[in-house]
Length: 125
Image 1: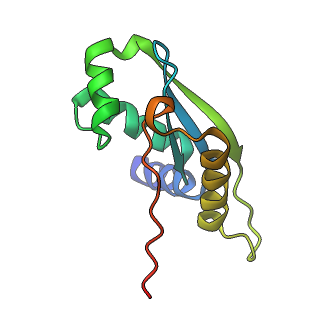
Image 2: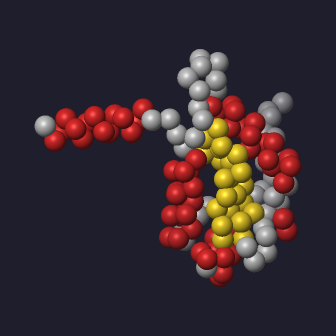
């Protein structure tokens, strides 16, 4: 009986819609930000928190500031959230890419303003 309940709960969790969206990790000392995105927004934020707390975050500048200033000097902010739709025309990955590009264009979180690196257009000619 317990095994059936666990399987049912696992299936329910897998089928639950999770919001996708764009978030910031803000350095409260310098106001520099790291802009990120995720299909499972809260899961993605938790992954970034874990990476930073274990010293394994792929963004070396952000990791260095986190190590120097401590977790209490950083804030995680959701700046745009969207519930996935069950429409066949809804492409969550494309929607997420659009949201990220829009926020990157608006905030320009590069250099002194942020930890992101400009994306290079990798077209092959």
